[in-house]
Length: 300
Image (cartoon, rainbow, N blue to C red):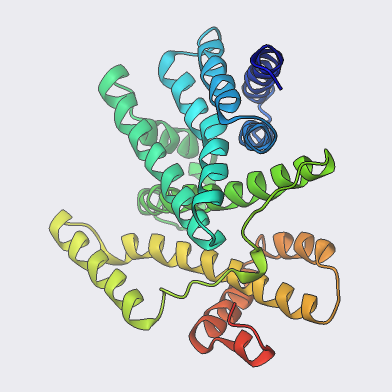
């Protein structure tokens, strides 16, 4: 394909990304924000890298017609650019679990940078605005239940950073595998890390103890509640081991010739249930410590 052929694809991609973000904001349908990373991932699989990069940059400029520059950058980094990074990591790395960790870290870092930038550039305290909205909506109900509203809000604010990590990891899997699948339906061969090989081999007991020790040190230096900060780390670890639990069950089913498409749907629904999170997370943790896949003839 020539450069003249690439230009319309780039322009259509930029328009699609911009419209997706605009519709998500205008209609309050945040689910539409998963489309930009999927589309740039697909563009990266099916076209030269410059097409996806060009579409990403053009969409960022287009968003400035509807939102301020800070939010235009925010939605570009968490949408179009996100998909390009996922694609790039899929070729640079052969381990999907590393991609999940890196993109989870990326999204939570963008979230933190946005909070500081909003305060520095516009004097807007994003977290305070969220707290005010929650108090106005649920404050009386929470107080009637005898809950410490201010303490609960502090905990929710802290956990929001872990939530961003989870969103980043989940969106990485979505854009990578759906982008690759759509590219394959167009007859374009793709090579992506196998989810059945998902295993957090670095997260054994000693490294995890080191993570909690580091968290304790940070809490002491910052004068923060250790368990409040540690809850974020626990939330992230449950998510990662939950994915490993899914991978192990899917691997076990695949070894017996069973399809996993419907199982993946059920597994996603289980994440919405605390017991489902804990059960598959515990399975993933045990499998990670014991390497049960070796029993079946594979090291994972």
